[in-house]
Image: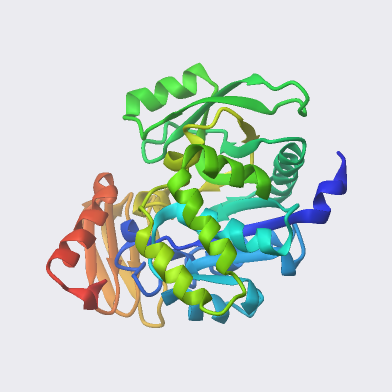
Amino acid sequence: MDASFKDHLYVLIMCGGGGTRLWPRSRKKSPKQFLENFFGPETLFTQTVKRANKLTSSEKIFIITNKDYIDEVLAQGKIVSPRNIIAEPIAKNTAMAIGVGAAYIRKVDPQAIIITFPSDPLIEGEDKFVSEMFTAAEAASKGEYLITVGIVPTFPHTGLGYVEARDAVAGQESGILKVSSFKEKPDFKTAESFIKKGGYFWNAGIYTWSVSSIWKAFEKFAPTYFELIEEVYRGIGVEGESEVINRVYGKAENISIDFAVSEKADNLLLVPGTFTWSDVGDWESVYELKEKDQNQNVVESFGKEGWHIGQETKNSLILAENKLVVTIGVSDLIIVQTKDSVLVCNRNNSQDVKKIVNNLKDLSKEEFL
């Protein structure tokens, strides 16, 4: 591996997700990436930044996040330089986050290779992660390529989109594949067929590209967005920078990088990711990831006074913050008790928690969000 690309290697961490399917623990003011005692003593955000530090130096790690989360980011052990934190005035999805992040990095280094990933997945097998990120970064340095890291699927996941890629690419390291299509979240039978057929990977939202390649991609595939990020780029470091950012975000559409660029690009390659990855997208995934007792229950207290007594209780996730939770003769439930709310639902309905959050929004119950 030619290591010269590492001289210009940057990481952009997207830290804007609300984690609404993990309500009532994940809230608007403190979404899942900032939760303590969720998966280990360190937050998912802290774990992500420490992982990024294995790829490049701390001064080359940038965070783009909602302005409401700046204090949370700064509170995470001062592991990020304040000057590398980019505040979004409003959430406008990943196309805007990636474009604006690229603009700030381009201002620092026009030769930058940028690895971009979210702040909230759970990743195990960090040696594989680092190796495969370097493979992607080296591939991006070899030409005008856009690189995604697709996760090799381990089960027929219906909550994720898929990327189809099979053919090897000339001039690249063995194992790097040409992306042929994106697939929306499938039903179970379709997801099963993807696994059996092979050549399908979970779309984890992990991308690597040179700043010049993503700039050209925006210009070609999303010209309206290109004009906006050009405006941001010109406004960085000049008087009225914040006004420029506010104006641009007010004009931007709320669309993903997949929709804006990736699904249209003819130069998108894929590096298979073999590390263990989960988006921790709902309470069912939390149940699957955590250690079970003899009755296949996950029981945890995330507060000082939460505890559980159960009889004939099995296959359930029970989390208590500050009260006694008692269960008798139940199975396959999700029970999450917080100081102001209690969630009880069947594990099969874990994706529907987002609907409850939307109901609370419609009812203007901001105190529960």
